[in-house]
Image 1 (cartoon, rainbow, N blue to C red):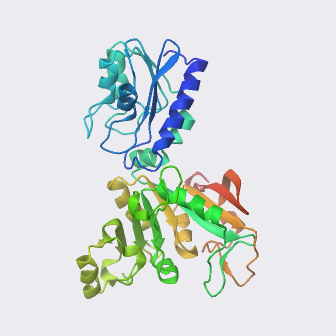
Image 2: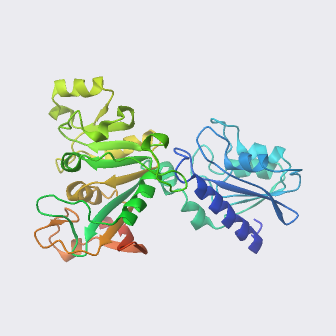
Image 3: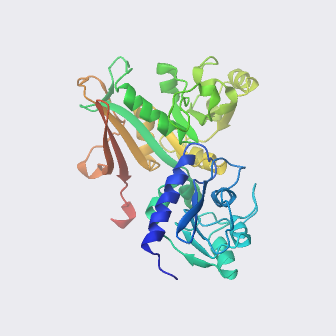
Length: 381
């Protein structure tokens, strides 16, 4: 396989930048960017903005003013080879007379999985890659995990004081962090396909869990932007019909245990249009989170943001479902009687969950930590 040139990496870096322009809007499709170069100059650029609209390659080709014969295409993800809502991008590149394609990573979608590259090679196009693979994979952790494991990428967001507390003993918690950190959480919501919380948080805080920023990060009316599916884990289906999170009802799903549901309450919620789903209880007596996340993945949910209290956050961690922990630490002390960050009843140091720090950023007066949990492989021990 041909080796990439330095210029290939520069162009791919630009394609990655373009892909990020669709960070909030491509669900359930992956975020992809494309650059078209000819005679050492960029002649076209594009990115995938929304499912059903042209993919990045198509957008880039359409932006070219002139002939694309003999040009090079740089694309962050292997060009698709199958007919979906739009025609195959690999065929579009062939028809455009592209003579070289540099790709960032192969498509994990089994419907593609190298077939796009084969189409290009059979057409006599030079194929180079992967180039900047880590950066390209970083664009779509949820899409990759859903294709490879049948589960969404789960990101748990928590806010705490310096002494690791999330709320006063009474439950009072607003606001631990400052406005800048809360604005950053809006970005996490916007890039997620679903936001998960627990019935305890709904009862305590009555949150809306809506996105209130646009693609540029500007504050807007929630009705004007795409809203993630809001998911409530509610074992006994005890949510109040007037809870804010239920409106609009077509953007909400509630997971519960069928055996604990009161029939009249179920009918009332369903009559309002609320999507009530049943999952079994796990060995710990709680709703089976793996089953619930699998259901979300089956309907195309790539990234899930968990915003909840210590109990459910701890349950996600115990289930081995947390891919990323995002913790905002406020410069405050809430005291020893305040509530802990996670409900994680460990007894021995050997049970401690190791965390790999990926990012540490000061946001206003708060500090943002991004960790990847390092789960123990008991079978290997």
